[in-house]
Every structure is written in structure tokens, then in C-alpha cells.
Image 1: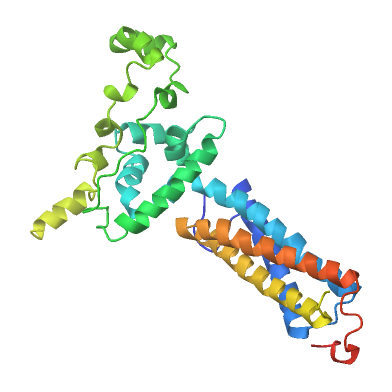
Image 2: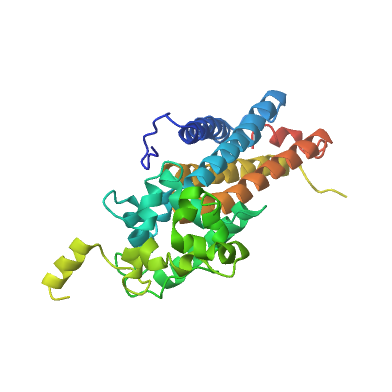
Length: 235
Length: 80
């Protein structure tokens, strides 16, 4: 479990990295504050102490903090921290939802990283290009979506940068498993799928993967309960 | 040639210390409150400030080891 508050439980490598970063930062800050307050002469001892405060410990913070930060960006919770993603992430996390996103998220192989697992590029620099696109997300969020409704209502239609590739699915669904081929519709198009002439999402469309988001043409919408409440108010 | 004094070296260390504190703050805030904007700030500005401050400190040390400013007014240099 990932904690989002100031209290850390050391029950995962990510939290251990965070704790290491925090401890290193506190030590470095104490050294620097000591120097700024006392202003000792720059003798050999002071230089060595400052090397720890300005170099060793801050480098430790940067290293462990970056790894922990990168790990956190893989989590569905992080994707949902932009409110326009809530129709996607809430559905994926809903144990009663039968959407493809929710079914995959309940699979422990995807788990809390289900967004990243299905949407990240798998090329050599896949992680880098995915994170670079994440910066674009942030730019668009600030410039176009920040003032939209609680679920992104009123914002431009959300779409992917490029069509969803079969490779995202065939990474797990290899198209060779007997159970998969037993499905007549799969068996009839397997060669087209392998060649890329047909897309998985031609049948397993966005409406089936993220129904709450696609119900309104890709724009965000509140969950069913919230919609009913809004309708009751005549909105 | 060089008009760098001991006081300048101490100022470099001072700026370095302040920049490091700022970068530490940015990085820690992003760890405690991992929001997209904070993470981006920590991984860009935080890293930039941290790297710059270390470079400034190393520059100060190199200048100090080279004996820059040794002939300045020593009396006023002990504690700036």
C-alpha cells in the first residue's frame, strides 16, 4: 500500500526509499542550517562537513527521491490525482465494475499499476517516452482542464496521442493460448491481429474498457450516484 | 587576473548552502505530497538547484585550494 500522507509505513521498497530520502534530507538540512547560523571559518573540518551537507546527503536524497517518485508515477493513484482521470481510475478501482479496465486492475499482475501496465510503451526507451508524454499531460491539464468540472466535465475530449497498439494486449494475450483461440471470433481474425491489420480495440472498444469515461463521448462525467443527485437538482 | 577574494569564496559557499536547502525542500515536498506538478518541479528545478549548488561548492573549494585571495586583508576574513 502506498501512503499519500506524511506518515510512512516501511512496508515496501518505495516507502523505504522515501524514508531514506527524508532522513538524508534532514541530516543535510541540519548541517546546512548549522553552517548558516554559525558561519565557521572554512577550515578542513568545515569543508568535509559541508561536503556531506552539500554533496553526499543531497545526492542521496536526489537518488532515492527520484526512484521513489518514479515508482509512484506508475501507480493508478497518481494518474487519478488529476481530476479529469477520475472517470477512468475510479472505474478501474471499482470492485463491482465489469469494465475491461476494472477486470484487469483486479488481476494482481496489474494491480495498482494498471494504467501504466496497459498504456506504457514497451520499446527500449518506452518508460522515457511514456514519462515525456506525462509532461504533455501536465501541460494540457494546466492549460485546458484545470477549471473543468469535478470529473472533467466541460473540458476538451480526452484522447490518446496515438492509436492503442495490439502489442499492449498481446504482451499478455499472446494469441497462441488454446483458451484464447477457442473463441471463434478470435480464431477468425488471429492472422489479421498478428499482422496488425486489425486492432484489438476494433472489438474491445474504449466504451468497454472505460465505460464511465466514454459514456459521454470521452468527456468526464460523474459516477452514476452523483449524476442522479445532479439531475435531482435540475442541473 | 583573478579578483576573487576569500569573501567571494565564502559567498559561493553561502549561495551553495541556500540553493541546496531550496532543492532539498522541493524534493522532500514532492516525496511527502506526490502530486504531478510537485514531482515535476522536484525532478527539474530541484535537480538543477542541487547540481548547481554542488558545482558552486566544488568551485569554491578549488579556488580555496589554489590559494585565491590569500593576500587579501586577512583580518577581515575570519568571520564574514
